[in-house]
Amino acid sequence: MDIERVLVTGGAGFLGSHLVDRLIAEGHEVLCVDNFFTGSRRNVEHLLGHPRFELLRHDVTFPLYVEVDRIYNLACPASPIHYQRDPVQTTKTSVLGAINMLGLAKRLHVPILQASTSEVYGDPEVHPQDESYWGRVNPVGTRACYDEGKRAAETLFFDYRRQHGLDIKVIRIFNTYGPRMAESDGRVVSNFIVQALKGEPITIYGDGSQTRSFCYVDDLIDGMVRLMGTKSGFTGPVNVGNPVEFTIAELAEAAVRLTGSTSTIEYRPLPADDPRQRRPDIGIARDGLGWTPRVPLEEGLASTVEYFKGVLDAQRSLEEA
Ligand code: NAD
Ligand code: UDP
Ligand code: UDP
Image (cartoon, rainbow, N blue to C red; front, side, top):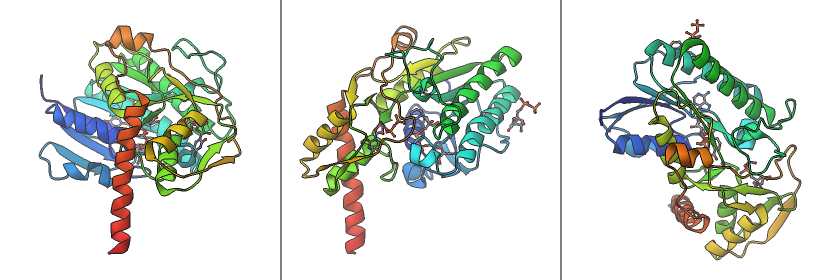
C-alpha cells in the first residue's frame, strides 16, 4: 500500500483520535487539525513527536491551505450539550467547514469523506432507518444546529460531486462509544459509566424507554476506513452502526452491573426533540463495504469501563498528591 498524507479534521476528538491511530499504524502520514473545542491534546499525546504525525490548531470555518492525498472531515462537536453551547458556531462548523474542506479537496483533486450522522433522520417514523429515508428533523428546534448543519453538509458534498466531479464519501454514523470519550462529553454511555463508577445517581432522561443502537469505536473506524477505500463513485451515504437496539433503561442496568455500582436511578426531563428510537439498516455497509460490527455491547462497555477507571484513578492520585 502506498504511504499517503492524510488530513483528519477533528482528529483530537474521540473518533478522530482513533482514526489517526489506525492511519499511523497503517504507515500513513497524518495531519491532525483541531481547534480543541471538545477534543483534547491528551487524545493524541502519545503521537506527539512521531515522525509521521503533525498536529495543527485550526478552526475549519476558516480556509486551510495544505497539501494532502485524502481528507477525513470529522470536525464538529457531537454531543448535544456541547453542540448546543454555541449553536451558531455548530452550524458554521458543519457548513463552512464542509465548504472549506471541499474547496481543498477540489484544488487538490483528492477523495474526501464526511462524518455525517444518524441525526439526519431526526425523530424517525421509519424503523430501522435505511439510507433512502429522508428523515424528520425539526428545522427550528435546539437540535437543528447540528442536524440541519449536517444535512446541509451532505448537500454540499453531493453538489460538489455533481458540479465539480469530486470523489466524495458520506458515512452516517450511529451512536458510537468507547475509550477516549471525554468524561464531560455528556452523551449517554460516558455519563452512565462515569456516574456508576463514582457511585452517583444514573441520570435517565425521560422514562428510559427511548432506544439507541450502540457501536463500539473500533468497529466504526473500520467501517469508515473501508468506505474511504472504495472506488471513486461509491459515494454513500452509508449507515455505519450496530443494529442491536437497546432502551436507555437497559443501558443504565448494564452500566450498573458491569461496574458493580451502588448507584441509584434518577429520572430527569427528556430534552426537546429527543428521538424516540434509532436503529440502522446496515445492508449497504454489509454488501458494499463487506462490513459488519463485531464487538457486542457488553464487551465494548467493559473496555470503556476500564478506560474510565483509569481516568478517574489518575484524577484521584493527582488530588492526593
Ligand atoms: P468529539 O466532540 O469528541 O470530536 C469532535 C472534534 O472536532 C473535537 O476534537 C473538536 O475539538 C473538533 N472541532 C469542533 N469544531 C471544530 C472546528 N470548528 N474546527 C476544528 N475542529 C473542531 O466528537 P466525536 O464523537 O469524535 O465525533 C466526531 C465526528 O463524528 C463529528 O463530526 C460527529 O458529528 C460525527 N458523529 C459522531 C457520532 C458518535 O456517536 N460518536 C455519531 C454521529 C456522528
Ligand atoms: N479553500 C480552502 N483551501 C483550499 C482551497 C479552497 O480552504 O486549498 C476554501 C476557500 O476559502 C473557498 C472554499 O474552500 O472559500 C471553497 O472553495 P471553492 O474553490 O469551491 O470555491 P471558491 O473559491 O470559488 O469560492
Ligand atoms: N440520555 C440519558 N441520560 C444521560 C444522557 C443521555 O438518558 O445522562 C439519553 C438522551 O436523552 C437520549 C439518549 O440517552 O435519549 C442518547 O443520548 P446521547 O446524547 O448519547 O445521543 P443522541 O441523543 O444524540 O443519540
